[in-house]
Length: 585
Image (cartoon, rainbow, N blue to C red; front, top):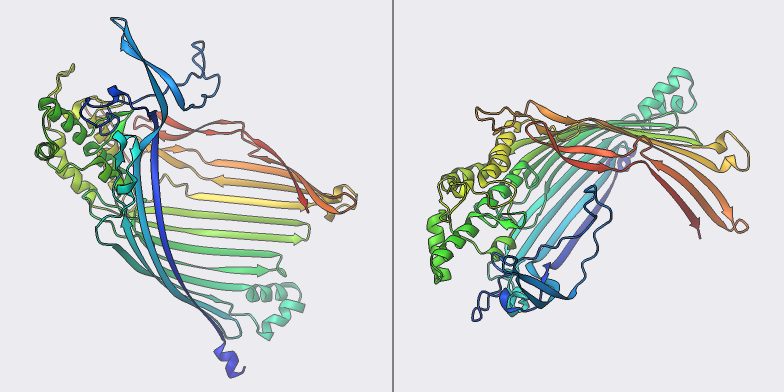
């Protein structure tokens, strides 16, 4: 071996990238967009009742059937914008008004960002030891600079966006996020290129050839990465900016190429740790907790503490100024109120650390040139390795206020706690807290360090193609190919059972008592016919596929109550017949 062969060959590639991206998103809602006097606070106050707490809202209802059988008989019709007559009045006195209105789109929300991305990096790939060792090393540096547009603003009494304000960027300093990503990997073909192995692998017989081909076709691989994952700006429950997610991963395994390339097998084991992930359980719990304080809405009705305290204070003092309102709200709520547009301008989230690990098996088998078979199987687990502390701290701070603030308006039930009022048709604030905050928090803590049972652990796929040309020379049969496939996924948890307290109320989940949706097996089949049309000028393929042959249609459970009752389903369509025709032009 010469010194050049020992040194090998090396390829170095460098790259750089610059992006300047401005993105603006406008949100609308279908509403009355004509300027009618009764849509404003008063004749002298230009504030539209459609803004703020939206006491004037339209709920569109569609007729989808008659009252016989209580079933849906046809799809909802389209919403047509234009002029209508709006009827309103007193059903007791029989006095009604008929006002001309216009139905269309009105502003609902806005957000915008400007992101400058600067990236540079390099990749070095080396082929050493007569290509028996192939190594890869790469590094990338990312810097992101983010500016937010001004918050949602309206003009023309709330019927138009105020673009003069919204198109300007905030005066805050640039938000700078930077990090690096490093990728290292190697593939070792230890027994490739040795005459003592190559000769029996090519011309040997029996077990000698088999073992020689096994050694020659053996590859061992190892990869390690440390990545930076820039994400959109977001704040935690204390309105502090979140760090960007980071990933640390490794995978290793081997592959075998046997029987002159007719059989290929690959085995891989991986482990990935995502730090500061926004996809963990803390994210949804934080949203539910914040909804109790800021602008929570259910069934079209707002129930949050900020909205309710504003209603109480304005009712008690109609002449209160906005500045006075904020001071009194802060004293009553225990936290400073925040404008609706400001709250919506920046997403709220929380972070957890998530560990993913598993094994992957891949098989390709091509025993003859007219039959191919591929299969793969995965064993995967996702573990919440660390739950963020902010949600629990926020709940601990807020619970004394949530459970003691009094609603001064008279109630039919006699309870005057805001926490126990039924403002929506769904549940009280206490019930929401027990379900979406306390219960979810208790479950997340109990599952910390354990694999998520909601993730289906085992999955498998099998696909095969058989061309009849391998067994028949018939002019029609030889152009036919048969296909088949099968898919498998193991069971998954859709909820947890609980134990009721002395009052019969379920307050906690028992994570050791999962409610499972069963494992699934589905199969496909197909037939394809290949021919040439128009005097052999155009190649054509006509194909019939049947997807999910064993599926006749059903409702698949996806969520269960603590009592074990299923309350959410997914519609699973029955088997599908798909006919396609392709032409080579």
